[in-house]
Image 1 (cartoon, rainbow, N blue to C red):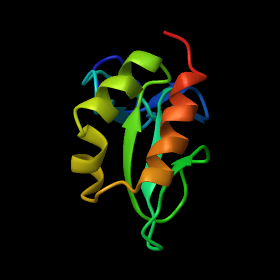
Image 2: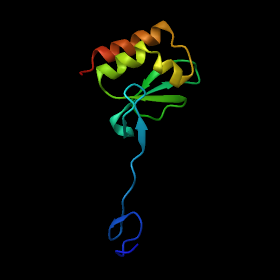
Image 3: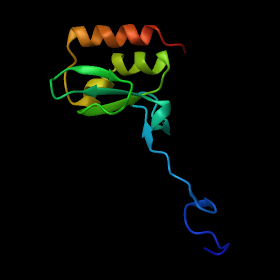
Length: 103
């Protein structure tokens, strides 16, 4: 580079890592992966909230705001993103989680 720095090096000996970015399926805002909540369709054919972000299966991300959760549930965005139909028990758990959120 022209200023003598090498790519992603911020300080001598330190490498600056890029944070993974994901998009909320409700509001379409891109945020870092840690700012969003992952919902996963597991190989066991269940839909669960994945606080670690590491469970196996197809995932979708939502902001930690009640408005995004309500919109995703109402418009069936979660079902489209996860490519599955959400069973009533899982839907009830997601709605209960959404009710506890603010905003």
